[in-house]
Amino acid sequence: MYPLVLSHEVVSTFSFWHEGVLQEGIASGKELYSFYKKFEAAQRQEVFSTAISLSETGIEVCITCLPTEYRVWISLRKLEQVALCFLSSAQPEEAMLA
Image 1: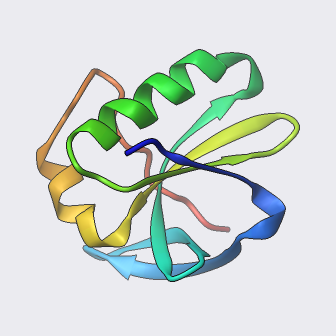
Image 2: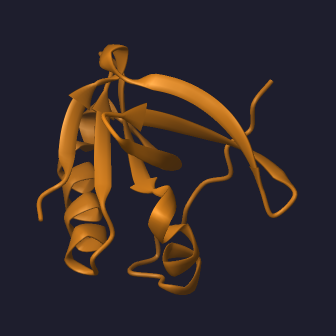
Image 3: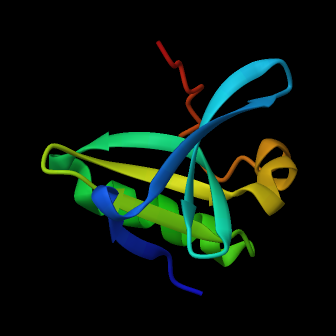
């Protein structure tokens, strides 16, 4: 399944606790996603490569687009699977909310 690609303005954001850390999340339709990684706008190819690699393992992925950056999000249903599965040297970023 290919990643869902959305404008960041059409998703609802929320925060949640996971393993003692405050995380950033989004809601789209009936699905909830956790922040995975942020990319600069010039890194478009890397964004889609990362998202497709995650999708190929059965993880539902969403990409949100802003004028200056892309963000990759993973389904909360698969959060533990991602923690165990390192697909490349790119590791999830911790969401730091101010």
